[in-house]
Length: 197
Image (cartoon, rainbow, N blue to C red; front, top):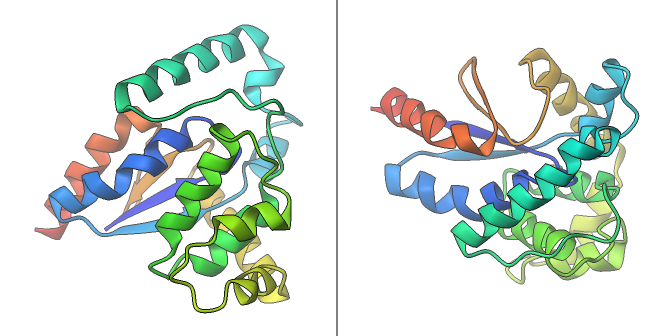
C-alpha cells in the first residue's frame, strides 16, 4: 500500500495526482490519498510563503519545469494568476472524502480548477463544482468539511506527516519509507508492489 501525500497549493502534486491512480493500478498497488497542509511545516522552518516565491530564480525554473512535465504527460496547464492559492477548505473536503471512492475524482478536479482553469479553489462554489456526480449528497460533503471532526482530523494528519519526516509535496510513504517528489513515484510504487507480493 502506498500513501500519496499531496497539498493543493503544490504545483508538482498536480501532474502526480492526474497519473498516480493509473500507474498504481497497473502494478496492483493500493493507494491511500492523504491531504495535508504544508503551511505549518514551512512555518516550523521559518518560512511564511512558498519556497518558489521566496526564491524567484527557483520559482521561474519551477514554472518552466512544470510546463515541460505537463507537456510530457499530455496534461492541460495554465500558470495560475495567484500562487499559492488557499487550499485549506479543499484539503478539508479531501480529508472528509479520503476513504471514499470519490477522492481521486475530487482531487483531480480541484487541481484542474487551480492549474488549468485558474479558479480560486478557496471558494465553496468552486469546490462544489469539483465534487464528483457519484456522491449522493454533495452539499453534505461540504458540510462535513466544516465539522470540528474533519478540521481536527486534518490537523492530526498534518502532524503525522511531520512525524513521518515530510517536508514537501508530493510525497509518498510505503510503511516508514519516505519518497519525495514526482520523480520518486516509480521507486515508491515498486517498493509498494514488492511489499504487497
